[in-house]
Amino acid sequence: MEDFGFILDPAFEATSVSVGKLPLCEVCLQADARWPWLVLIPQKLGLREIEDLNVVQRGQLIEEAVAAGAAVRAVGGVLGLPVEKLNLGALGNVTPQLHLHLVGRRAGDPAWPGPVWGVGAAQAYPVETLAQAVVAARSALNIC
Image (tube, rainbow, N blue to C red; front, side, top):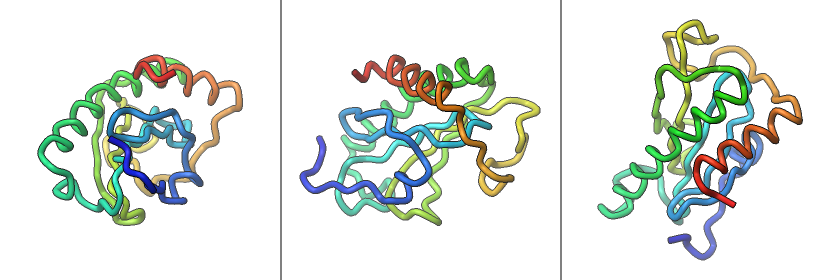
């Protein structure tokens, strides 16, 4: 389903690490170890809103988001941050390319119960933990 010429917005490259590709979406791990956090970016040109996807693609996006929930929980396991609630957000105010955030939340996390956006400074993953988180997410999503 990937479009020829699809380009990932550079903002994602600066703030996340690639996990791999699903049939519709590029999957990235947000580079903030305070939360298990994945971003799904549909690999279609010129998308800004969910309504820009056709009905089949919208269904595929939801299915991939459900699958990514398991991957967020797997990343939470690596971080020792169990996921009690999965937040799904499609803001796009800063980066207009259509994308969905899936953030694993728990009571007492640094932003609980409010939103994670704009709360403090991102905490970098230790190198080994980042590698383990990517492997866990790939495994949960069956990405080689």
